[in-house]
Length: 60
Image (cartoon, rainbow, N blue to C red; front, side):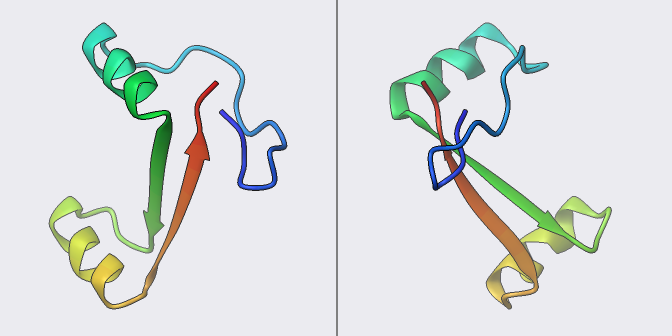
């Protein structure tokens, strides 16, 4: 995976299923969201209100 500037962001094995990896490879992108919450239900609200950081990585 690379950062938007094409610098390496992560090089290794993701702890996911084979189906998830296949779907991610098909789209070629991975979206990362981070916010000041540990509650997945609140994450959507924080993304919608601009209180979360979103990054798109390109998968190679």
